[in-house]
Image (cartoon, helix red, strand yellow):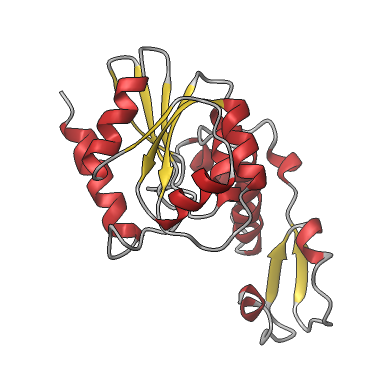
Length: 225
């Protein structure tokens, strides 16, 4: 489905991508290809955590260059950028616990990227789970066991399949409802730890969509006293 982004481009259009993704494109393109490299902005001030976010930054910089925005203005804007809601968004510090909202991570790979981004900042208590998307869970289970302190699971078909097919070797609990999932995550946490809400699965079953899940998470976290 992502191929439709560039499939119908013409000679005057641009496709901004990475070297790795370009290698996957087998068809001949009419559009001009620009390769974004995160190394070019390696030393820029950028507060959003994660190497995958640095790659996203590289794409945005290439777009800005196309519009002939001066590099000093690009750097200034990047330095003041605090991230996007639901994408490794730092919500608040609650009793010494840093809480991150990564609601838009609805695949195992996306959650692994979030774990990799934060694992050096403190011990991670992961909040994840939900509806099955029939994706491979092997790497996800390994990443959770290796890098997380505990897990508070959202109930759902995906959670059931994960726990049935893979051994989670760290402490975990399954919440009765979404608020209970958050409370169980807090029970595992102490000052200096990180709570990472990064579902890895779909929201359907408990929620109408991921946006409803996002809004409820933000609302509950902001009300914590």
